[in-house]
Image (tube, rainbow, N blue to C red):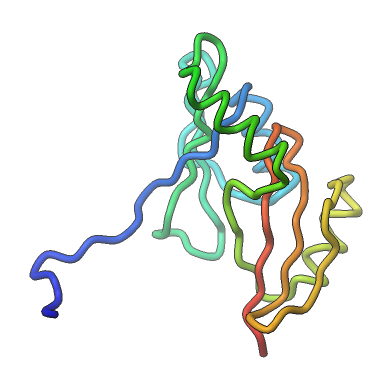
Length: 137
């Protein structure tokens, strides 16, 4: 199979949240992401990792007011099943975990070593589970 002549990369991913302003505050102040765009009156909030300034951005996609019904159902079902909506990589999951716990983050799963790396999962205070992942050393 030949490579595409015009390859693509991931530019933006969406995380569904009921309140983009609340989520923006949490993702920037608690999780440490940086602002890309914030227009609360238009329900637009976009953040990025400080580790990858030109990398993927996260659109904190509103499900309220008047959000897309299927997005609300999708979000609610993922949460009820205990499935993370997104995975964030980290260099040292134990230090990241300790820092987030100090900030009041509630973990559903403490850091655990698996055959493919270390994993942990927390509640983002916006109705989502977020998984942390660290590659094996």
